[in-house]
Length: 266
Image 1 (cartoon, rainbow, N blue to C red):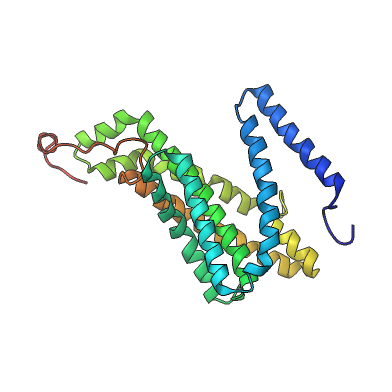
Image 2 (spheres, rainbow, N blue to C red):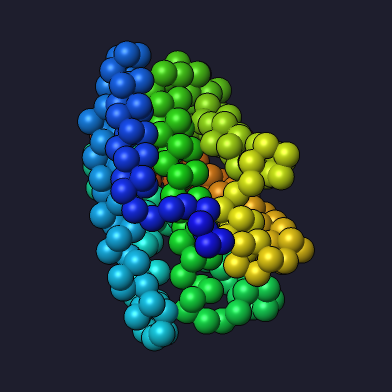
């Protein structure tokens, strides 16, 4: 295998096709309705990674190209989260949550010197962090919007008690923030005991230094945890303020309703 963990050739193609078929079959048996989406996602992953592999070396040699590539990643992440949450234009505000989570983390690792200020280092770190923020934003936003629909009575009851619309919505949707962070928390808690993530394995194979590999993985995991926490907080806040919504904004009480409730705010 020559130091590689994957043999590139026809065995890889056979394994990939078999794995896709396995996932599609499981979806069909369970009537999950994700068979087609699984096949499309797998095909896209193969094509996109092949395309990226052909241009990534050219991209990282230029700072302008690196910055443009990172902006493209942010744009695609925003579009993906927006589609997951809502079909309306308000979904594009997901970009605020993704940027809010990604920018501080990338800035900290670069300014601190933990990651060298080179394109070959910035692109993968930015990609990992943006991807994590995207997933967290999608989950938190969808669950928050679902909570507002299914627990409508609680929201209206809070309004009747004099809560502002944003505060009333937060009472209902805040729990979704905790749920969205469960995967990141579990991954961080169990790293090395349950899973050996890609950053650890990649650095270990490339350098043969377990200390450097462990340091890289800890940096990635804690950076992801920070980025996802900020992204989830921002996404939930945007939903509570009606900046991200399904079809219509959360109805705000009229002046008469506020006066009837005694004009109390909390």
